[in-house]
Length: 209
Image (tube, rainbow, N blue to C red; front, top):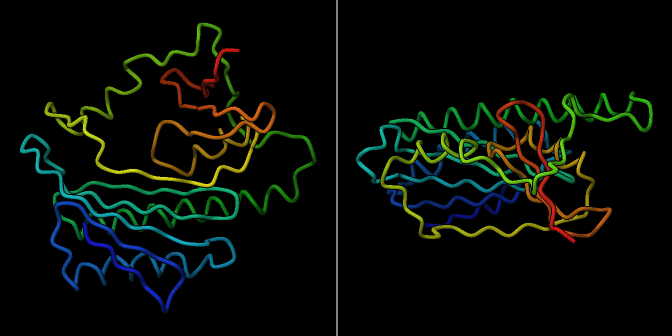
């Protein structure tokens, strides 16, 4: 893994796995992300870029570019795959730009929305059957990595978890490319998970008392 920091810009780190981090590739990734986040300096606190090459021969789109941007109160993530790393970086930065624009618009609209109205377009669904997620929820994710899916822990992440409500957590699902979001429940102080259901809406997983 190679880590590169950028002292003369907003805090930004570039890391990589199984990829030759040439100066040209590193600079390209940083310039693409910096161009996007520079338009949203009032919101973005830092950005972490991670480039990965999947060596599994069964995976066609084996170049992965991912960026995780920390904004005020939220995390915005954009991750894309391609058969070329530069193309993956282009897709990743475009995706980040769209999500930051959406975030900015929602913050602006929230100021004009009457207090107490939910920002969610879909209802939050608390499962009564133990909140088990069906296997099909993860089939598409596993398939993307091919049949030789590696169960070894390859990367660890740590985030500051300010307590938020389940509705706010469901709101965050729009800004990440994962089908789930882990958060600390402001009402109970427990660690909960919200996830996108295949059949619509959002599911909530919470520990049994």
